[in-house]
Length: 114
Length: 115
Image (cartoon, rainbow over all chains, first blue to last red; front, side, top):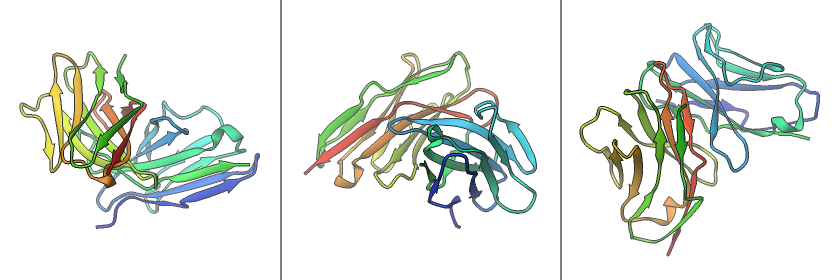
């Protein structure tokens, strides 16, 4: 049973470009979470999605960031017009239910904005 | 407001000894969950152990155990018989109230295991 798959593992973008981060949850998991980790810090919640629905986006910056989890295909975190402060590790996690079941994280995407 | 505190930025332990990583939390929610994750230098987040607020017994998973003291609001991770591969960052996390896995994380503790 494959784990949470994220790609790319590393992504380099110049200021002003767009970044697209992909996440395929574990098989059977319909709940997806995105977290961001700045250097030397813990993870910070960004957004929680179920299939085709955004449930909680309270941790998402209001501008330039968007997330989706379509009926078919992976969840996508999209960052438009990236700035240097967007450089971070972005982790996706999934769970089978919306309860205390442990979150299984992917290996993360390390975004570097030059 | 919910809060997680890890007061030890770094810890050292000799191989084969036990080590305790501290975690305290603050919440007014009677129902919550506590998690520990390991992040090695390669960067992935590895789930270690989980404790529910209503669980009567302390959680254990192999060499990992969680010393859960509800009245003191602490959930310390105990690693027994440390191994060199245990060297990593360790994060304590708490599940927000609200019914889903919106976690807040502590700042982490960097553990170094010496031979």
